[in-house]
Length: 212
Image (cartoon, rainbow, N blue to C red; front, side, top):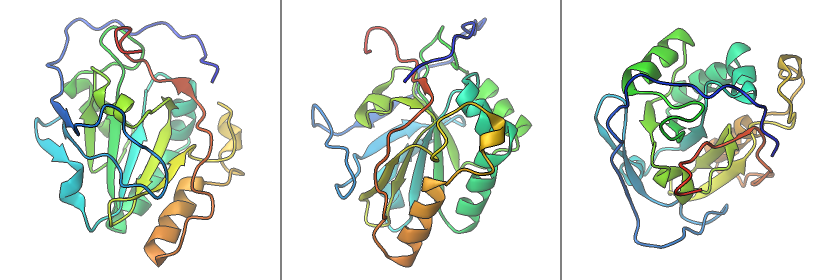
């Protein structure tokens, strides 16, 4: 997808790299209907978050980059936060992931990430930092945002765009069809997700050049 040019955020100090343990498979088979790849990642509080520990709960993975205009579109309009509130109120575990490498657009330290969450009144269950891109590459996350819904059995129920309006225009949010909301409703009802995979849109995930 096309990425809008923005000045790279320069940070005075680098945070400790997030700890991440992934499965032994060299390349995960990430597709709807398959078991979602397990992982253990460090959140901004220093706590280890393991996907398999949430078995029995629906989990959302949201890749984000606060400087990406597509991400800004969903946060400036309260679209992403509203979805987070709805989901977590319903018992869904919402994990926001930052895979921007140090020195690239969207990279944040733990403190900066927590401040962004507070300033934007976001409501994720946890915010995971992935500066080495291990979690992002495990799930083949391509854009910000890129969304994944995992059902209570640990199977991937949905992957792709948040909605059907692939623009950075704030005015498009209201009329958009939200794929993630549909997927969560279907999973809650124990029904198949009608649209289980879509093409994600947004800025490319700013992985380390060594792993891109």
